[in-house]
Length: 303
Length: 299
Image (cartoon, rainbow over all chains, first blue to last red; front, side, top):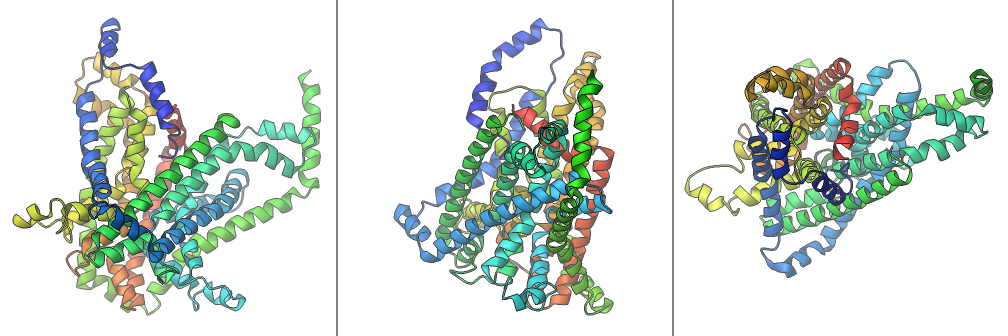
């Protein structure tokens, strides 16, 4: 969803170059090329399944959110506890995605450019957050960062409390988002033309100058994509967060948890209102990042 | 002529390489990367197994062979056995439509297929409650006919299908796009029928990509927590999947048992990673090629 930058512009291009169904039959008559069968069947099934599983349930959420009226909707989403949970979910997700953008770049760089022992194993390990069920990640991170955990014990004397604080939320979201950044950057780094770096070096640029002026600009679009994917995953994350967060209202309670709390109290309209705000906010942010990304890639050429 | 041009380049590179302490920078970067991966990926994995066996093998075996654990394992396998084939079928069909034909709105369709990635699993579960719950659109009808969707297995299956919806399609679309339609057209011109072309031409071409998508889809299907948690109702022995069982044991402060069941899921994750690495070794394009082919597709 992120990579489809500026969908409306592309849509125009597609319809412009390949107009409606009529010319297609004409083309088939002109050229003796066999027509691949199954267009109606496959596209029809795709649309049906997409509508039944995704589109109808999602639109139901939007429609049901106004069941109790606009005033009630507004009252729910501006309640302090809801605002605090939304702020935590979005703020922690942005922070975690930013941390991942930096360290993900370092990891991708090291994996592409350097050789060291166990590299293939370490490369495979990057995908663990994809494969490990979130509940397992959640209890593992909690055990690790709890005051008596392997890492928590070391951080405790430094005055850093991770488990059962907002910091714990950020840690869990970093775990969840890491592979998105690394796996987006790796192919781009592999394709970078090293001759350009060599040219920069010959012209007297320092290592750092070469990185900042030559390499980084080419990486921006991919970094934004990775950032956006990590953010999108993190903002709605539930399983890995609830164990480590402590879930104190106003402090370390994430928005998805508040949705579940409201559902358990049979407050369907409240739960739906929060869900709609989350959907709208994250779609808007993704559109913004998409626009930024297409701006970055036109500015620095195809990357 | 060319040699005269290249000589200063290589000389400059040779000069700048080791002299500026590049190796130190390299070591620092490798150190930072490994430390970050150790803290965020390796240690959480190790802690699962360490905690699982912290009370000995006996407790471990008791925790994973207890009846409620067994029914959770069985339910997880059942749900995956329904959800994965459904999304596999959708993946193949949608990839066929998208890569073999030109039509209006194709890139919008691809965006919609990816949509579930941007929806919180909790919201995915919520949407089905709003449709099939007691106070949902179809709630009264379902109640009148004694059909249970929410707080029952069908709801768990639906929620799992929602969150794993794009996995097979998004792996297959780039693979099929890269292969083009020349092979299929050749087979058709030789007189093969549509099904024959699919079974004997397309399927062998895409088998690794297909397996790759199924592997990722299955890992997520078996591990899904948020969406399933909303629709399951947490009825022990009936609607508890393995991740939900882990949560219940953990919240009962039964840590060793929780981590024992979690270790089974962690083992599944390791198997998934091994399978993924194997497929990437068989078909290197799978690892990185997908995104590139995808960008070409959307141009």
